[in-house]
Length: 236
View 1 (tube, rainbow, N blue to C red):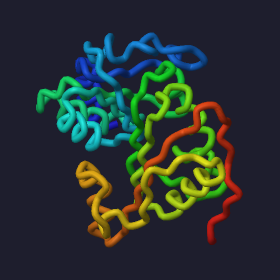
View 2 (view 1 turned 120 degrees about the horizontal axis):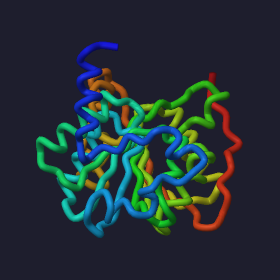
View 3 (view 1 turned 30 degrees about the vertical axis):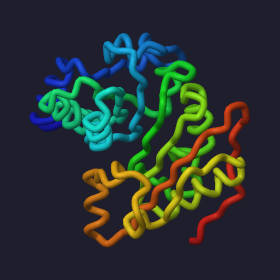
View 4 (view 1 turned 90 degrees about the vertical axis):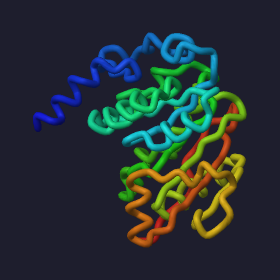
């Protein structure tokens, strides 16, 4: 491991806007901040939104800057990416932006019922091999997990360059009669439904430079219904 990465990880331990729990704190048990992120971590009563697989936290930071009356928490397992987002938040003085370093498979251990206002999923690994579809962040496994803490009427946003992931997610929503608020397979070839969608992550900028189309879908989860996988297959 390079000295630069070791330095960043050591520095991050001093950041007040980063939580890095050990596995024993969350595996098979609730994390101590569950149900109390706003008051105990952000030190205010405002609502909390998540960016899952946040990378360097471009959406976490952009949304926090645009909505100072709300709290935003970026979640990722990569320490160097978390460091970059957290360091930028500190440099910009964003008190309503924080970061959680953990595996998203364990996300249900961190948040209580109705604690999260909305979820952003920005350019996740599309997990193209069929045997890995269950690891997609919009699979039934994850959506059923999100239901345990997303508030009633809360929204989920998926922004991706993967047409395969977009089509799969849309098929899953249709299969489960879930409410689709907005869906497009070519985001920048239409009027944006709201201006903050113009925020671009590091990877999104690269994809656009390569001529790839960006897809976007926003939807709501059902309140009291188990979400199931769609009857869906992809070409190839």
